[in-house]
Image (cartoon, rainbow, N blue to C red; front, side, top):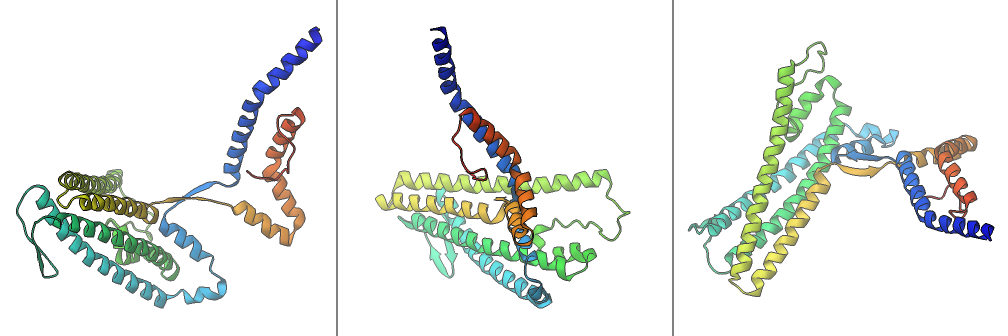
Length: 315
C-alpha cells in the first residue's frame, strides 16, 4: 500500500512539474537560439552598405565615380521635390494654426487664396496629412540613396578624405565638426569632446521636442474639428483619415530612418557553404552549435518530459 502511495505521489509530482520543466527548456532553447542567430541593430544606411559589399567582383568596377554622381543627382532631385511639397505643407499648417487660435488669416498657395469657411480646415488638414505621407515615402528613398552614397564614398575616395566628402555630400549626417583622420596624434581635449557630444544630444532633444509639438498641435486640431463637425459626419471621416495617415507616416519614418533589428543567420549560411566544400566540417559546425540543445533535449526525453524529435529541429 505504501509503495502504491509513493508511486502515485511521484506520478502526481511529475505531472505538476512537467509544464514548468518544459517551459524552462523552451526558454533555455530560445536563449541558445539567440546566441546562434543574434539580433543586430542596423540603420538603413548600414544595411545598404553591407548589402553593396557583397556585389560580385565582376560588377565592382562599375561602382565608380559616375555611379556616385548619378546617385547624388537623383538624391538631390528627390530632396528638391520633397522641399517644394514641404513648403506647401508649411503654408497649410500656418493657416490651420491661425484657424485653431481664431486668428483671421488668408493663405495663398500656388496662387490660390484660401479663406476660412466651413469645410476648409477639414480639406486642408486632409491635404496636409496626404502630403506628409508622400514626404515620408520620399525621405525613405533618400535614406536608401544616402546609404549607397556613403558606401561609394568609402570605396572611391581615400580613407583620409572620407570626412570631407561626407560633409560635402551627406550634409544632414554631419554636425559641422571636423575630426582629422590623417593626424592621429591630434586629439580633441576632453572639454571639446564632451561639448560635441552634448551638442549632438541637444540636437536630438530639440528634434524630439519639435516632433512632440507638431503631434500635439495636430491632435488638438483634429479634436477641435471633431467637436465642431462643421460639415457633419464628413468632418469625422476626415479626422479618421488624417489619424490613419499620421500613424502610417510615423511608422514609415520609423522603418526607413531609424535602426531596425535583423536576425543574423550567418551560421546557417556558413553550414550551407561547408556542406558543399567539406561535409565533415559542416557536421562539426552543426554539432558544436547544437551540442547543448541536443544534450538538454536528450536528458528531458529520457526523463519523459518531452517527446523525442529531430535533434536539429528549430522552433
